[in-house]
Image (cartoon, rainbow, N blue to C red; front, side):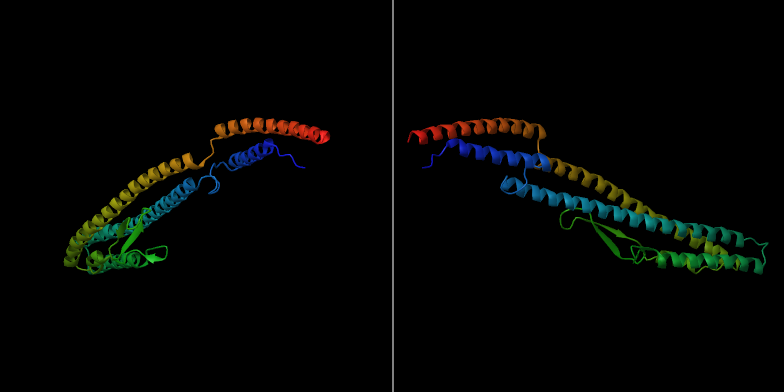
Length: 261
């Protein structure tokens, strides 16, 4: 003969609650499976995906800044070379120089021209040529078509300075004009790089703010409220101890009944 006690079901319920609270306290998450809260788990998964998208977008934007800085550094070197060619051209324009003097100056100009050509041909980022005249697009948002494009000239604006010859006074005068024109184009290109970097910096700040807001929203849904969980655990422990006591009394009562029978 079996005598069922309602305290047994109450005890099992308190044990399940204790296991759930222990898991929440151990993991720091109040939603650990769909059984805890299926709707909340779906929201948490979507927010996690959004956070990962924002994090990767920020990394992409930093790649764009690094690319722009690499290109700007290369153009800075080109600018130095153009300035030196202009200085040599002014020197070659002096009437006191002989033909051999100007040829010596032209030899240095030729070296600088080679340096400029090699800069445009060999400057790369991540193995990709920068000065190829093609757009480089960066995904800077978690949604489709959220991009920023970077374009570096193929270096053709510097062709004028690559063909100058200051071995004559006339050539020196032409070289001064060419150097001025190339410097203007070069400064314009560098200004575009600066604007691109500033745009990406602003984008990074905005992405960081949005990512933080999403993280806070996810935390409110997912993370364990330790004060509340600890309070619930204490209350559940009291209930568990009471159910154990009731179960013991029920077992004694059942034994007495069975003894009478």
